[in-house]
Image 1 (cartoon, rainbow, N blue to C red):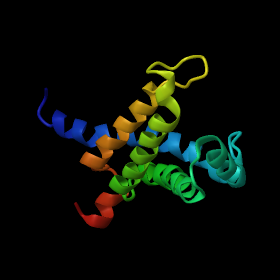
Image 2: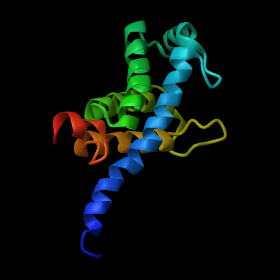
Image 3: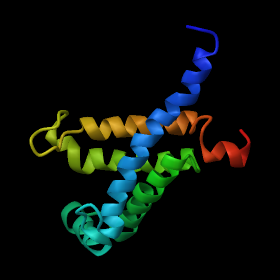
Length: 143
């Protein structure tokens, strides 16, 4: 590889993960929090999580914060590791509570673990490596 190519790859790789992961979770968090994109909104999300999955309201609120706030944080690179850790936690619970029983592959109902596992892996990458060179964290924390 040409001199400097690895440095460019190191700078761009986290961004290539942050943008799609952040957009996905900002959208899903918006569904749950604001009822956007065909979502149920806050009140219905609390009811559904408790009735269908047995998740208490406080944990539902934490999941919504992790999705919406974590999506925004990952997308902008603000508190990237914390934001990504919240997303990873939500995906671990989703794999266990919802998707595991449906097997690995996405079926017609989209219920297998493969997509959730990919999102979990993307978020773990950001927890371990941070948001990269092009993120707000870099400006604030001078790292």
